[in-house]
Image: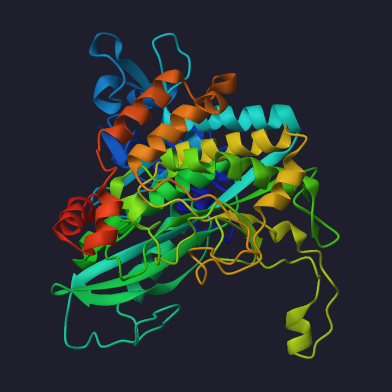
Length: 501
């Protein structure tokens, strides 16, 4: 974590303490001394979008009251599964999430919130509380602490011009061969100011013109942090990027697929498990039984994970054959064609910089950097729910005595993008992810007991998720697109979601 002096979070700089130690009194002092006029309570509901209540700062007592007790809200308008006759909820701020709003014309402090019911208990069905329950159960069962991080891919959509004659592959292109680097760089700066732990950003592969519009793909990657913090920063990052889209007069979209012939956008999630400050995924340069068990557990639940990580019909366009997106349920080392990838290791302790620059440097243990990546999710997902679902998979694998053996059965050494049909007799035959919301819902129903164990996912949430997925009636969509290609159904589907993600 950056030192207090170098931390880009403006509240951390001013209060001279890490965000995790913010108190109510700290926020009141900052608001008074910095002459902040508005306090905005923020939260993410079912759709994963950031919503808000605005409070005018009128005095110390009023400010103290709302920070201490929160505010009442209509839960039935936030969560469709709550009935109107018993839907009042308390919205309570989480002080550590406070940040100075970088877009407000009136000086404003924004704070992410959690939901409590009429009995003063955390709302069991709110997304951030489901993730919190999963984290607590994981620690209770394993004694390990989890960290997660996201890779967020998105497209910037602008008017096409004659100057858009760039090569097809835009991966890590720089100005002047990319148009929207300034937007991405500003986003990185603002996300960090608002408390996000950003590692880097770059241009991605997608870059094309279509129907008078220019589409340019980018990615921002975060650092591993507490899972709740990781979900928070994804929510804030998406909001910042959309706000910058308004500023730059372009459209920023997290739609999973814009065209069958162009790269789609995912939201990859990396994870690491630690105990006593030590990375439990690797030892002596090899994956531990802990990591193999976690991999096997997640892959066993992978078909049902799509219910939380791929919740819209357009999500499943990414999994169609020929899209170069992992759709086979398997894992591999440094293999981007598999659903789970173990990235290039940092376990060799080779001081590359010192060697390249002819300098002496002691070998440093960088195994703490080793993560494992799940590559199937996309930006239409609610990050709290998909993170909680992943943790359920981790626990399933860690409690299964056959999980290490199963992980070997799931292992893939080949490039599945070159062998989509797996026709060679000596190849392993891996199952595929669901190809529609309907299929995902059916799978979740079969696996629902895993998610409801220890009351992590309430039955109401599982029921609601299944009904929502089935309501799309998309069972035949992928099959029709295989036959007819980019037909009007696809164009209408993309138009529906392009500006809504």
